[in-house]
Amino acid sequence: MTERVIKPVGRGFLFLDSHPAGCEQIVRGLTEQVEARTPQTRPVALVIGSSSGYGLAATIAGLARYGIDGIGVSFEKAPARRTATAGWYRTAATAAYAETVGSTFHFINADAFADTTKADVLDLLQEKFGGVDYLIYSVAAPRRVDPRTDTTYQSAIKAIGQAAETKSLAYDDGQPVLQEVGIEVATDEEIAETVAVMGGEDWSRWVDALEERKLLKDGFTTVALTYIGSELTGPIYRQGSIGAAKAHLEATARDLSSRDGVHARTSVNGAAVTQASSAIPGIGLYVSLLHKVLGDGLQTPMQQSISLWDQLTGEKPLDLDEDGRIRLDRWELTDDVQAAVRTKWDEATQDNIAEVADTVWFYEEVRRLYGFDVPGVDYEAPAEVDVEWPT
Image 1 (cartoon, rainbow, N blue to C red):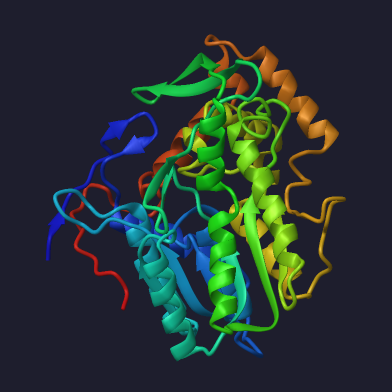
Image 2: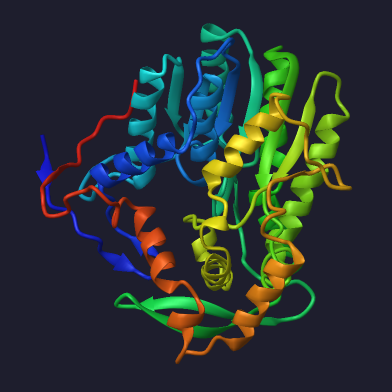
């Protein structure tokens, strides 16, 4: 037993420790957002990136609503001198929930990009389930080592074609600070590396591996989660180096769907506060403005994940756009919502940022990513940090 009082220590949106009890409570709150059902069948799902953000929400929604069995893959740090990463504690809590609802769901802590990980996961799939019905791909990583060339690729958050500027939200001792951030132009090499990290190559390799092992069940469906976003964030996101990677992801979906026995889509999710998105200039300000406009109308990752599973299983028809993408973000991109956000974006200054944007909410959401500021948790009490990875 290793108990200690844990306080949020870090810089910007990055914290050095996470709170086990807070992370457990976050998972409990997510499960309470889903109307649990008694499953008639238990489809087998493989979720790549199951410990955080939309991948976590998709895992819990599948467990609660459709009784999925299967495997979740993520890459988290164990407790040592510091606490474990938040995803480590969230995974432990998710595994406990899976057990309570009767699902056989295994969690693998390993680099999803590695061929050895793929081999181990597929061995387990074959042994325990004989195949897979759904593959959810939700990976947000800053770098990737290609196991076949041993090349390390580093993603870049840069503009394409011409430099850009954006407003961005930061915090100084919890107080909001409005910044003007310059966005450099990406080189061709930086764009290519970003595509190598965040594009569809690794997603395709997972499907290749499953196909080679004859583990695709009839009707196999796979979806990679993506984002389009607003014109306000376009220069740094959709029209930038990240956007090039997202375009490659969408092209990969079309390629995969051309194969016999594979149904592949990208799912366009709406804006949310995640560890990945909070690192991108402009996104924090945009999301805080969006929440100011929509309030509870801002759909959570869990609400969107429930809709995704309903569409994937055929309970509801697929909501597709002209490019064949599943759209879970229509609530965000309506003309009236975007006009209201743009007005606030243009109005925002350092003097009025706390009133124009929902900065308190955003700051608390970032802290909750690490298990802090969660209602019902006593942060003055010692917490057990040596939580075991579920086996």
